[in-house]
Amino acid sequence: MEDKRLAATARLLEIMDTLRRECPWDREQTFDSLRSNTIEETYELADALLDHNMEGIKEELGDLLLHVVFYSKLGEEQQAFDYAQVVDALCDKLIYRHPHIYGDIHAATPAAVKENWEALKLRKKNRKSGTLGGVPRSLPAMVKAFRIGEKAAATGFDWEKREDVWAKVKEELGEVEAEMAGTDRERLEGEFGDLFFALINACRLYGVDPEAALERTNKKFIRRFNYMEERAVSEGHSLHELPLGRMEEFWQEAKRTEK
Image 1 (tube, rainbow, N blue to C red):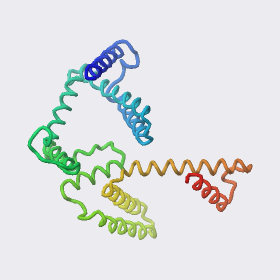
Image 2 (image 1 turned 30 degrees about the vertical axis):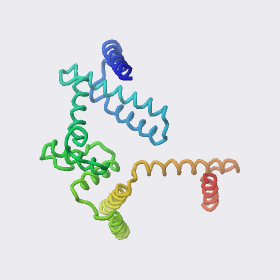
Image 3 (image 1 turned 45 degrees about the vertical axis):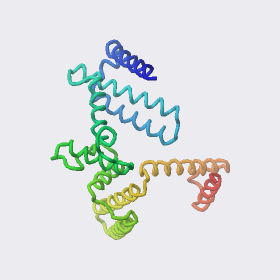
Image 4 (image 1 turned 60 degrees about the horizontal axis):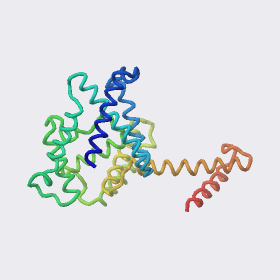
């Protein structure tokens, strides 16, 4: 098995060298030009993971691995780093952050491992960046909020009991409702942001991935809305021609078909 893995990696690196030399498209790529493609590939992998599509996961992992190899090749050409240095740095990091495996630290639970991991990460980072300095700026807002909550909680700044978060959610909901009576859109936006942040923290405390939860609801809504449109067409109408009450009937039908 090990020989197969090494052979596959060597084949990929050789192909990358060839493409970089001979393919007009690959030759002109830079760190900047590949960035948006890398983000897109990451989201495609996320979709496959959400669907538990094993064939899709395998394909998207390959696409993402190509980007790792591509960036490593660019780094090699600029004499900044190469693929071996990328992998060796990763191995060193994994060993450093798993002292309960490679050292004398005791961590018997996943929570203890994660707490130790965050502490070690902070120790390695530039102290000026602080606890939250390692959260990437380019993360989508929901994912960023989740990671901020995780990192803050690792310092002990968290609710004593997870049930306590609901008081914060209710408080923020009340502030949204109060602000809706006014005309200051910026303040209203800020209160909605506070409410979202509290809900995302609730997801974290209850072990729910908010991104996956919302995407599941998105797909459910699309599925039911498509059913409504198809039912309207079957009766010779477009959806916008129907009264709201008839739409609601179709919506309830769609829900019943899922049970």
